[in-house]
Image 1 (cartoon, one colour):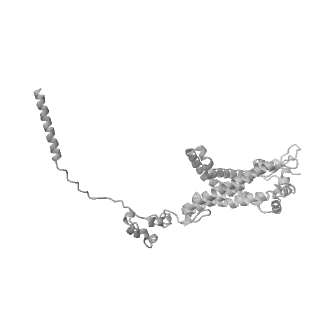
Image 2: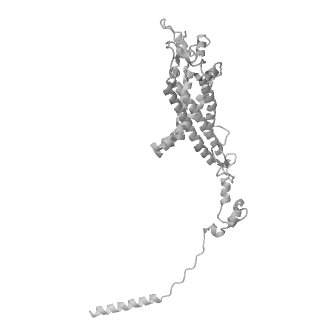
Image 3: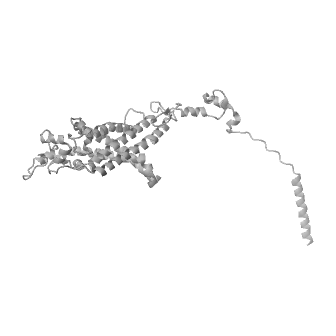
Length: 396
């Protein structure tokens, strides 16, 4: 017991001695500041907060600005946003915009005076998209109202059963290949332009993204096919779409669409000629030229951003006008007129149809100026004996 007590006394003494030693120990010397390295941050307001009051502050170069406000590169970025060309190692002939980060200021239709990229975006979103959608909606609404108020245009007299060849197999193949290419391009283009408003909320971002990617690829590959078939359309139907006597009378009477019999016309009436000259040839030229440019298929161009933006605006505008015009053509060729669709599908029309809708063309056939059967297959069938029955294609 005595030994335990002695051990406790010794331990207490040692503890008190250590505590005193720690209390009397000198404090360590303050650490010496280390040498600074690297870039120090700097608040421009602490450097010279009143520098903006200097005369010519907004006209300062970037070097002058660094002397009064180090770190303020506003003059450089003002030049960049204004379209100033910087230095690039790429050849100017191949990359003329390599030194331009932001395009120059312009004013496109429907945009403010701003850099070209933003101006293009404003024109697309504020002009082409809303007014284009309104044009297509009004066209569709007008056709719907006309159909439900007037119905399908029929015949006033009974069919004779005798057929006239209206379109040869080559003409029908040309028309259908061009029509299919146009419909594919129209649908894919409309989805890319307007799909985010009515498809994106339904499909979701991932599926809509893949859909537009596929349609864009299809659009780019079908475009050259549309160019080729349009050329075939022009050369195939050019002669019969030339202006002729009676076209203005057809126009003045509105083609008989609002009452009365249809005015006499040749193989193609004035309405069909408007579609040919205004849609296929005039608007088609702008659509094709701008589309080939956007696909970078025209030689001799560098394809700068500004040129591509202008080409897109031309392409979108001409395409929407062409779609609206072709919508009327499709309506007349399907629901609007009885016998019009079968004429392009099978190639033949009844004598009564020809006489009521294209009387001058029918008169030329009846007078022998135009053969009733123009294709080789049809002529062979017309001269074959049919047991005393009236041969197909011989008008009374």
